Image (cartoon, rainbow, N blue to C red):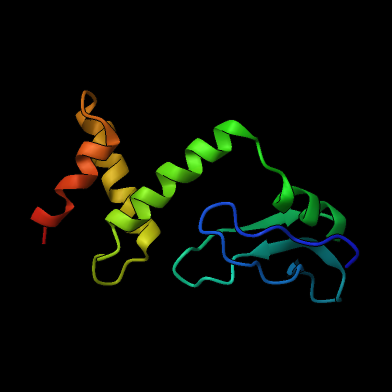
Amino acid sequence: MTDALLPCPFCGNPPRDVAVAFSLDNGAVNYYGVECSNHDCDCSLKSEPTEQGAIARWNRRSGEQDAKDTALYRELLYAVSKKWPGESRHETALRYIRRAEEEGSKELAAAIRTQGTEG
């Protein structure tokens, strides 16, 4: 691997090295991927046909909007640090996001703040 991988765009932990995400029985590689080393983060990409493509996609950041999204994502992960039994934090976070979308008029942050009142 010639290019260095940037930290995870969501939690800031280092990624694992680029790995074969899917291969055929005959050993031919179909896709490469990168994933975060933080087991609670679940951030990964597994859909690039080349190793260099996986590195470039993992390292791509969208600038200012990415910083805003990352801050909101970190707030969400913190809010759901007490995940539901049998779910990852991402699955629990998705539960709150969907609830906020269903309620329509409420902000995501307001829905997340109520997490302490649920089971």
